[in-house]
Amino acid sequence: MYAVVAMKTETASERRIFPRNPVKIPGKLTFEKGRVGRGILEGTVLDVGIGGARLLVSVPGAPLSGSGMSLQLGPLNGHRAATVTGRLAWSNAASGAHGVEFSRLDDISLEELKPFLWPSSDLIRSAVEACLKFAPEEGQEKRVRAFFEGDVKGFLSGQMNAVRALLAREIERVSGQKEIDFHFDRIADIGDELDQFLAGKLAGIEIKKAFRDLIGPWVYKSRIIRLAYEKPRGYPGDYEMLEFIYNDRTVTPGAGKYLDRYFLNNGYAEAVRQRKNKMAEIIARRLEAASVPVRVLDIACGSCREILDILGSRTPLAGRLDLTILDQDTEAVDFSERRLKKVAPSLRIQCVKQDVLNLLKPEAVAPYPFLKNQDLVYSIGLADYFPDRILMKFIRGCMDLLSPIGEFVLAHKDRDADHHSPLLPDWFCDWKFYPRNEWKVGELIRAASPGAAIEAERDLSKRIIFFRIKRR
Image 1 (tube, rainbow, N blue to C red):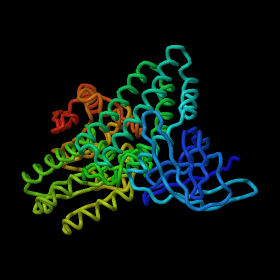
Image 2: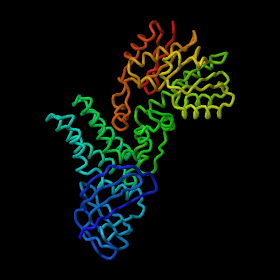
Image 3: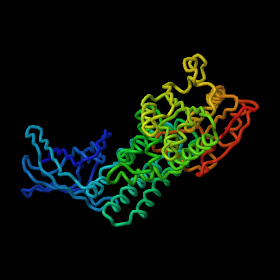
Image 4: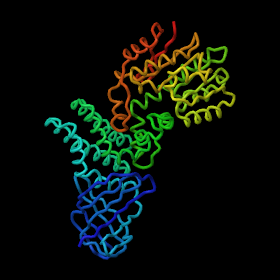
């Protein structure tokens, strides 16, 4: 006799939509009254996340009624057996379906369970077949299969084993985090090599999409990585994301905190923090040297953390600052204004809630005459998202807003400084930049503003170039 058992395990945290995943797991289902279902449990994984796991699984020997029960899965593929206990919650004699609810699991038990549930061979096979439509050649097929069937499964297995050992305190925190970081870095490097080997834009897009589908139920346990991937405000790097990076603190409980930490330790995350510090230094020096208020325009202001840092540590400088902040995100502008006014109630601040690209249209700027004649215009997190043509227009628009003695500061990531760091946002978060080096950005500035005086500086991470541009 076969009964359909709906298995649910949960903790008090996040739940997430999950793709259906067929599984065949060696295991044993034991009921309180002594009935045992043993063998290969066939069914479908419905959900895996920090909140737990739900399965619909056919089990030989399940009774039509009962109370207490336990489920043992494994051992399988190097993972030791996992056992969870629960109760038979409901039965449907007509259909032979039974619902089983498992008691809330601690983090260790939950992490021991997950390697048996995700990903299945069928799901891996489906991902491979979908990608092979865009990489049909024999050599390409071999590389794609090896990536998903070997490298991706190895990534998930290595991550889960490392986190389980950390939660069980079998290894110390620093060593465990290094193990997690190693698996992240390794799969990103292997994926990048595959992307370059295929040399096909569409093939690369499909492989990355399939990769995210497979690793998502594990990696997106991290609240920070999930936010970077989902982009709830419609664009990458919104003000909430920046605040997570600036604060440099994990926010996800349990296993997810180790994934948070990997993201926050990424070279680009460190560069974002150092970029903010460098911009604060440039602004503060300008204010300290001024005898009259300095007109400053922050374009794509985000959370204005660099201004907050200045006002928080050097409050008297607020009297020398005449600030305008501009962002397409109304919530970002409101958040920044509210927080800055709390720190410096007398701060002169004007807010513009506009699409940044409207700066390129004179008729759109006309309603905001105060945008003109700025002593300092800066944009530190935007240029990397513009193609060359739009970036040149943006530079021209910003230069038009300067006073005769004004300066435009443009920050841009240097593609030559760090090959590895962009792989995390690309592969795990679908977060892309236009890669340029110092020479290329300088060429675009010279084309957009012929004759301008240009100086280039670096932040402490050496990954960000600050172009300081003035009219001659």
